[in-house]
Length: 337
Image (cartoon, rainbow, N blue to C red; front, side, top):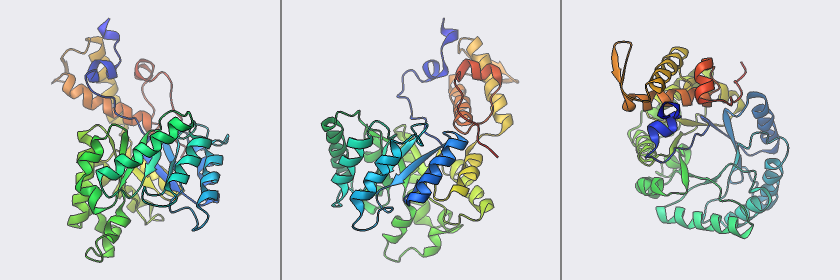
């Protein structure tokens, strides 16, 4: 019977299941762009999340109306896949409690997550989580998955404590605010390409966040690339984020960025084919060690190849029929060219 075990049970049975989040987190806050993003998600499938922005997207003085708009969009038929989240104001902001109450009361059952920005410490995260969970209980809604933006000195200092919080599923790096928080000590070129991959303080922050996320089984989400009209440079940055810095998710701030990021984070066709063949052979051997293409493999390497297939599924890659029927009986949409 063990031969029929799914890889998640056979290979990770003793570990907490990592959240299987799409590889792109697309941010938008202006109404027209929010609606356009929902239409694009309906076209491409759930290969990217949409974060509707109640923080920077809200006009000053219009925070309450903007939160209501986000709730309306999240509960509309345009939210076809349930992969729409929202960023609220920081915990210390006057609009935080109203954001949370409105969004949970009116859209708590349709939001995929809430993003908590600008915490100054692990204690800030704890207080924000407690307030959100209290609102969920007050409105008889299930607890929402929560994500955190690491963009202050204090949050970076305590990033491992934040990653350890059981209610947090993902850590994002807020590049622009992080650079600005240094009061001019980091040049503006560190917010651009290639500077954001070269300045030592920015590189250190990216590595710390990725390491903390992986240490506690959370998803590290890479920061924005502002050069949104240069698809080639964006794709190169996304590949570096995935292959050199250990990120498994990345922000998009323009619809044209979504496809290049998905492509950069997707495994190559030969990687998918190798992983599928190996895992099917391992399953047939009841997940015992096997020889495959003149190399010995066991559960340690099986876990790696399983992540390849999971990335293929999250990015809409075609899988061999035998592997799909064995491991992913329900397919997500395949991204359009």
